[in-house]
Image (cartoon, rainbow, N blue to C red; front, side):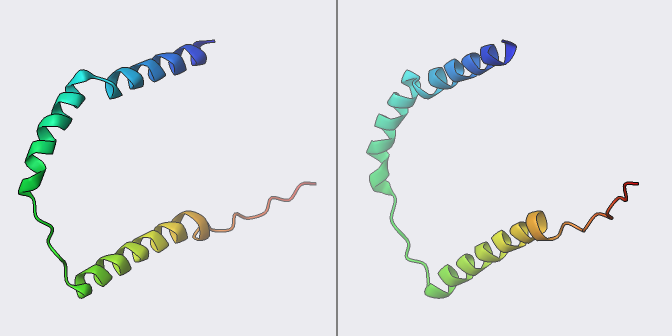
Length: 78
């Protein structure tokens, strides 16, 4: 029963935090300033390098958590 209570409290807090009026005011003021920013086109080499580095990091993480687990010695049950 305690777990359900914690779940409901967490959900209510999440709803209150995401639906606060302050976020609506910030969205309106932000939309006025968005015209100040300009898109910068990155060179193809930079895009490729970032993509390759990201894929390499993802591959390393997958290897670490899935494939690098050492085989545990099998226990013999008599």
